[in-house]
Length: 231
Image (tube, rainbow, N blue to C red; front, side, top):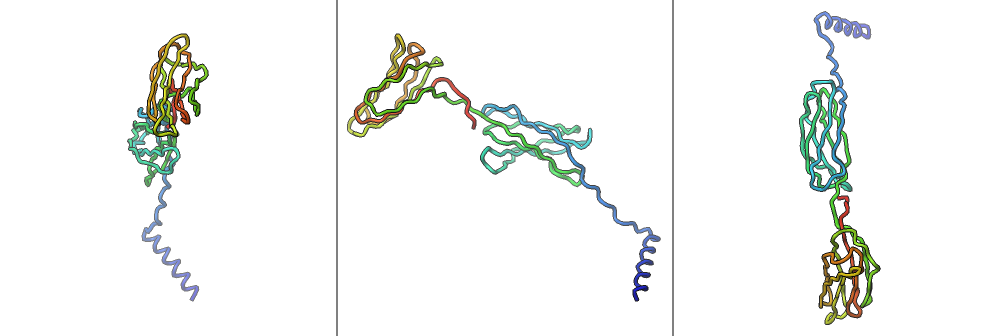
């Protein structure tokens, strides 16, 4: 019986060859894809335009294909879709977006039957200008003067927050004494509050003075100029 089965299979294979039945063609593997990507400029100010550009290609030409863009804010796990571009024949692509936070940009070339997927990442820092704090003081004394302070810019802004234990009384006076000349003051007759002293009357150097009621706590912060803060 075994000889009969083997012989039958051999005859069937031979018949298939005579009838021209060819084995199924093997499908070619998707071609690998080259890709470059850059998000620029960096760092940049919050709200400015960032350019997402690069190249995705397999050969010198014939590379027109879609590229998808995503963004992930620093400290978060989620990717957010932000748009797409279509690469030209040489594979070059570009798109602009608004930079709102620091994070990572991603460019993705989706896979097709003929070409593999490709993606590239680029992290970008986004900053904003914030007031620069040049001095900070706190205390509970009713009369106090700061050390001599150098103001680096033409203007300053001083904040004093205070709280007095007696709600029926209390007051606050914050004064700036410019060296040689100059005097500025902001006052309140409330037991608790926050005051702002704006200006720069007099010399760049001087000192601040706090006058308040007994059993009051106070906090003074002085700002001048700006610094960049990552967002």
